[in-house]
Image 1: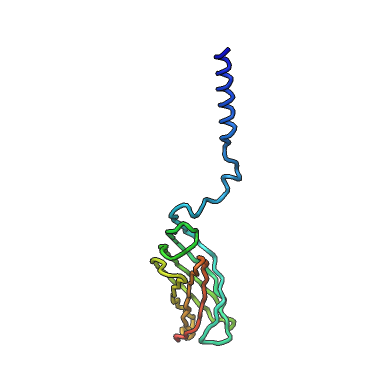
Image 2: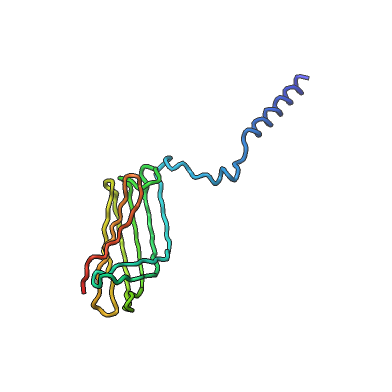
Length: 168
């Protein structure tokens, strides 16, 4: 009788342990990981459609509608595991952009650009500026577009475009 009691107790223990160790549900599998757990690497390689309206400083009041694609390869090393871009993080970006468009007077424009950037975010906010050439089919109304990319202390990225320099 002692042997059968021990066997029954062992069987109940196994059933109890198995019942407590449930397999993860689909909801558990969809939960995001704890972003504060460790250093993270974020990599992406994407192509985006781009639609942009610029003001031409060579022809005030004549907007240019540009469309095309942007190909971006990005790598971010999140050193504090916060999930946000913050001081100490390492950023590497390669971006190619090819845009074409026409202004309201029928002048055609192209804006092609390659940007390579690599560096460590030193402080917050962090700002990086880049200049892109916009070339007209007439060769007269060419201008520069400056892009200011800012990352604030919460990791929020903002982009400001300035088309403010006519270069003929």
